[in-house]
Length: 169
Figure 1 (tube, rainbow, N blue to C red):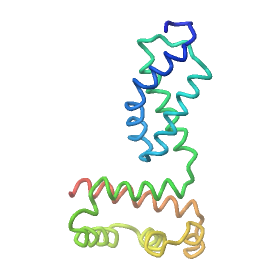
Figure 2: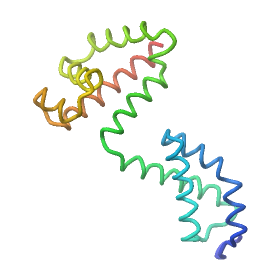
Figure 3: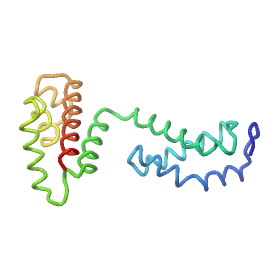
């Protein structure tokens, strides 16, 4: 395949086989979901098949990596605020090993940090959302603020928790 030529089915299949795994793991690093990662890579190849861009062979890998990255970012940008916050919260807890082998000790440290360092409203919002499993709307009504305020407090709280525990492992 050279610049300006159409890919044959065989070239397309070979390109897919040579790059799928690498692109899948690249996508997985971004979206953190195996099914979504597979869908993203498949979607990129479907678009490649239909659009058949004129890309030089030596630049095809970079083109595919960028296309997967862009598609991942597009997928992530379309998720609801709730999904993003819940995913961020659970990933940060897991990735930063806040909850590790000695779960009780770590949870105690987390609760102590929350009680010591976060404003009362943020503490209340965290408890209602994650301990009582209320929706954003329910939390907003209970506390008397907007859903955006609930989201902002949750995001800021998780950011502060992440910073604290990454510094104090």
